[in-house]
Length: 425
Image: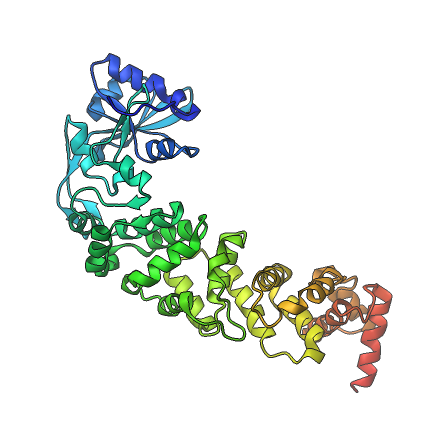
């Protein structure tokens, strides 16, 4: 008799799907992450079901279905308007380009289905009574806090090279170690990562960086040198790996062990890329290679540009340079950078964070739309046609307002512009 668990609410809600399959004479079990997380006492996010029923049999049993991926044996069953992926037990043939199986064969035995999975902790099943089926000793690995491939690690990684990144992701997510045989196989086959789409690489990195233990992921990525073997070169990969163990430089961001204290993933990426050795072009090229969406890429590089702007400032000009950085790269990027400087006690400007925050909080305007004078009004005040000159003059006025040298008042702004016009003649 296996270990029996109390099913969490999401799995209880799915029980009618399993019960109906069993009533029709088929096997049906919960598989994958929901089983692993239930065994660990963690909340589950979704539910996956595996069955001995063929896809066409699943379609005939349930009145509301979506033929999601029939060639791979997956049918989405709708029960009480909740979708559940129901997949037929299967084995997989030779893999194409170390990623996807060329063919799948439907089978009747659960063991064969679990054998094709990546890690022992993901190769457990649970029946409708909560009884665990664990042919590959996944529970032992959970107790020993170990990430281990199912069966032959060399075969698993050669079948699907993405599993190397997944192994590191799960080790970092749960603060587990990677089994020696699995680690050695990862090192042997790391060149196969070149076959994996960069979007998938980025997705796994996102999960690592946004997880509970990003520093563990960075340690394993650095030790394995896995990112050196991506299909598209990552210029910052080697430097990021080196940064993990490097000695802090004057303006480098090296307190990686506390990276989990940084709130959002993109701020964590910015913190990593703000090392003293990674240039902005290298960072930008790396983010582009990883297929970061344009909005995220711009948000992260804007933080790096604030860092670059703040590198060279003499103390006497700190407020002016800070204000210029806020206006040029945006309030959001500036505040993100400021939060990272607050987090990193080694940063040369850590001592100044209170002043920098007070200055940005006190800025009456940080972009031209907030000025109480627009280009048309400025041109009317000078009895001239609007042009390039209006934009340049408004930016100059914005700087004075942000520095608290000039009130954000239409008349005061226009008067100052007229004074400058006279002085510049």
